[in-house]
Length: 418
Image 1 (tube, one colour):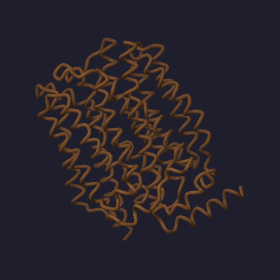
Image 2: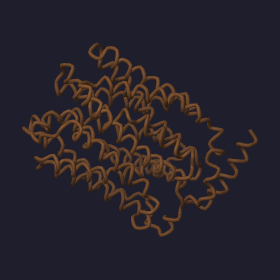
Image 3: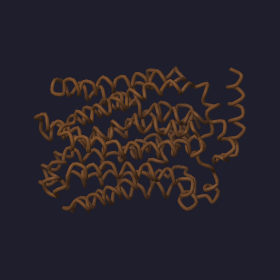
Image 4: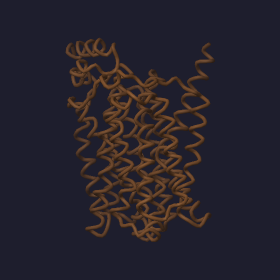
């Protein structure tokens, strides 16, 4: 029996990895091929920013609608439908030659990612409640690895098949494989429920908004780096391949950060030391790009990548730990991702605009540096003993779990006693 449970847990963990690998190629495959895309379609930098910004905005809007969508759409339908949308969008890109069609494919892929990504933190929390930080680190690492593979291999595939369409479209294959694996494993997933629309939301919670803005800003560097790092590298004299490899370097260190820092600090219930270290790593990297852009770009990108990877994993873990009931924590994570990804999607558009009006990326890196400094100050607000007090009002909103009110009352009483 224990052996069966262990095998089942490993299967679920493999499913998490297989699904997560498909959630970033639609973003990271664009940057290394951007100049080829621009020459073929005539798309400008601000319009090209939509190829990153629009999917991320979809990743924000869909989770916000989740309490209502789940009246008609269960977890299985959302997971399989989202993966199929990613596969369809990528396949469509094999035949594209216009900017409008490319942008439309980005919206379709973004919607697919949004439905899947809104589910995953809650599923990880439900499936691995006793190893949440580690499981979330593995999910984050797999998500970032998929993005890194697309950045590194996309330009090479485009060169081999003599067209940027191949570099974008090939990522439909792993999405289809993920659909088949999910259909084969058939994990326990919830059906659509008429009660879900009444299960509450977090729009009235100040702490939920703070977590959402925090998540959005500390991850805004990722979408900007994915969108502009290859173009930046070519601007300082590098090649398209070199720009893609830099994204690959960033991804390797993102994986180290997403897995390594939670493991290193696994004995701590306080996520603030890890987040402070991760943000400090980003800060040094962005200051390096500002002060010595051509000296050691690999070093600066590695530091930024480590910080981004750790921030993504730890900030989601921090969010889930604010509420004990898995359903309520999953709903909070969906809200945080919703607002957060809207902010994260806006950031590369702003940094692209700054690049257009200034002629280089220094103003963009300065904006990201200031954002990291602000988030360093905000991090001190997230003391573990304050979770229950910060979320105490949420027990009145019926958040998707009949036991949640009792849990929150116990948490609140314990917090007041400290």
